[in-house]
Length: 398
Image 1 (cartoon, rainbow, N blue to C red):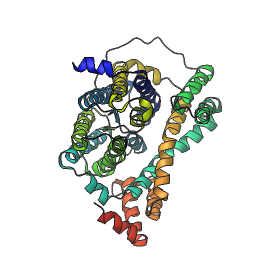
Image 2: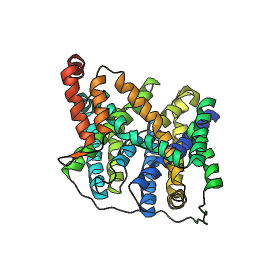
Image 3: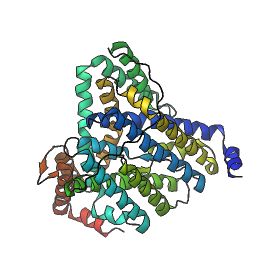
Image 4: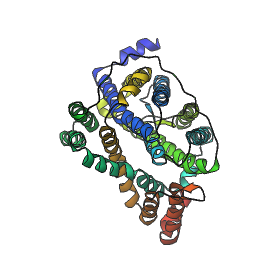
C-alpha cells in the first residue's frame, strides 16, 4: 500500500526537484569531501570508505524519514563541519578526529532526546560562532586564488563556469555544476594525467583507530555540534516549518544524532538535515506540498548509488588536477563564507564576531588548544565588554 501511494504521489515536479538535489549532492558536496581527504592526506581506500559510509548513512536516513513522515527530509553530511575538519589538518591525528566526531554524535543524540539545542546556542551566541566559522574556512578561498595563479587554464576555466552559472541564474542548473563541467573540460585538455580503466569494485569499509583527547574534543566536537546541529539541522528543520510542515524536531534530531555517531565510528563527519538540498526539495517549485517527499526519496536514493560506486569514484577523483579540486572546493565554500560573514558582521555583536573571525583566521595553538576555540573565547569576551546589551539579550532569550 505504501509503495503504491508513493508511486501515485510521484509527478514531474517532484522528480525534477529530486534530480536537481541529486546533482547538488554530487557536484556540490563530493568535491569538498575529496578536497578535505586530500588535505588530510587520506589514502584512496580511506577516502572510498569515507564516501561509502557518509553517503550510505545519509541516503538510507533520508529515504526512511521522508517515507515515514511524508515530508521532504533530506539528510546530508555537514558541509561546514567537513570544511572545518580540513582546516585543522595536521593538528590532530585521524584517531583523535574520529574520537571527537563520536563525541559530537553522542551530544547531538542528547540534543534530540532532551531538547538541549537551544540551551547550547544561548551559551554560544550564533554571530560569534559564525565569525569563528568564517575565519576558519577563509584559507580555502585564499588557496583558490593561489591555485588559479599557478594553473590559470584549469583554475580560470572553472571560475568562468561558476560565474556563467551565477549569471544565468537558472534554479535547476547549479553554478557549481557549470564550474564542474568547464573545469573538467579544461582538465582533460591541459592535464597530463592519463585516465586509467576503472572497474567497479565492491565498497569496503575501513575502521580507523579511535583516540579520545580533551584538546581534540574542545577543538573539534564543540564546533562540530554547533556547525551541524545549530547551522545545519536547525536551519533545515526551520525551512521545513516555514513551508507549513509540522516537523517532529526532536525525533528527527535524535535520528540524525544516531546516524552521526555510527558514521563517526567509521571516520565520517556528523549528518544533518540538509539545508541547500532541502531548499530545493521543499520549495513551492517542487510540486504539491503533500507530494514533495518523493523528490527527497529520489535524491536520497542517488546518495545510495554514489555510495555503491565509492571505490571507482575515489580512484578517478584522486587523479584530478590539484588546481581543479582546490578551485572547486573554494567556489563551493564561497557562498558559505559569504553567508556566515554577512550574518556575523550585520548582527548586534559584530565586534565580537569580527574578533572571532580574526583569531580563527590565524592558525596557532596555545596550551594544546587551537585558534578556533580561542576565537570563541575572544569573541565572547569582546562582546561581553563592548556589546553588553546585545550579549545580555542573547543570554536572556529562551
